[in-house]
Image 1: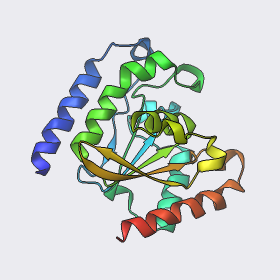
Image 2 (image 1 turned 90 degrees about the horizontal axis):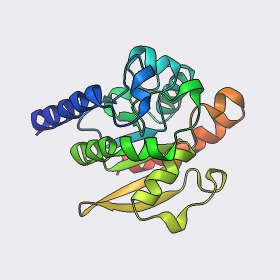
Image 3 (image 1 turned 135 degrees about the horizontal axis):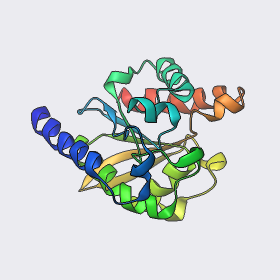
Image 4 (image 1 turned 180 degrees about the vertical axis):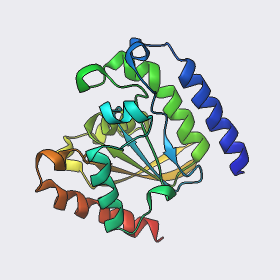
Length: 197
């Protein structure tokens, strides 16, 4: 099973390396396709790569990545056991928010990644990711500000497979506001419960 997944995910990587569907490819160093276990039960989906990620091609490798590692450790989850990626595979200039057309162009890669990996739990990191995924998975009527629904659990279905969806703050919020780290840790506790089922 895993060999089949490896091949399919490699195909997506090759497609992203050749992708010119939006203008972001022009200024990138490396696209950030995704990293982690191809058999992951938990998939984390962020918004777009930052400067550090663009230099290395690895998701969440800067300060936000350090906070993410800390949060995962707090619920005894190893980074190598999860899969982590972003909606956009290339870094927007000056770390600006993703644009609608960019999301439209890039999100089919993410959708394929989800279908190949078949996680049991999908976690959005940040409001752009939350909004995109909730709209995609038929939860548009449940969308509220992230400050209201962070840490909430939703049921979704992908190709007749039932999954859990959790909206989480982006770990970067704790770099601007250290008090947010405790809120994030509390939200991550839900993963401990779900992961042990």
